[in-house]
Image 1 (tube, one colour):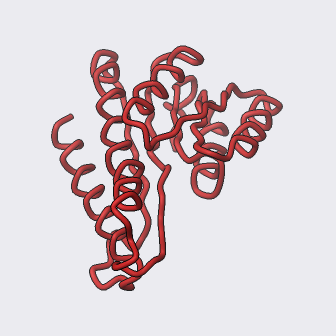
Image 2 (cartoon, one colour; image 1 turned 90 degrees about the vertical axis):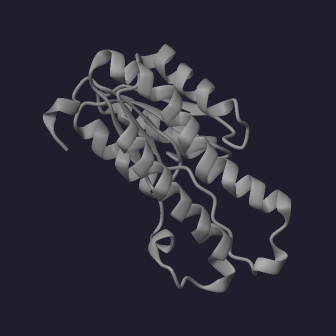
Length: 177
């Protein structure tokens, strides 16, 4: 991370655990103002926001159900209302299921695509125009290693396909911006 992140606003989805919390802590250490997006686990994201504030930083935890198509836009707007326009988007939220292909229902598949593919796309779609206007912006799409593995375990096939599609979408977003 560089000192150019100090005072910038970052929106980190999936900030209630694991990679999202680690990235948020690192960004906070650089002086970045943080909007911590969470789905169903409010308490860890709120505790992280309190930790960052106690350390002298600025942070807010914002709940969003990324299965809803309106949620990414609402999340970007709430982050901007609370801290200022989003300069850094860390799209880290994701769903992963381990189940045989024949047991994946259409609802399971739709939910996985909504959170792992549509939400990152819509988050970027909402965040990029103000980034362009300000002449600064960074986007990080976080996935998992199975998205890079062609011969992933059959019970992870649907998840893997979704991650590969996210990688393609991230490359297209980078080319478009």
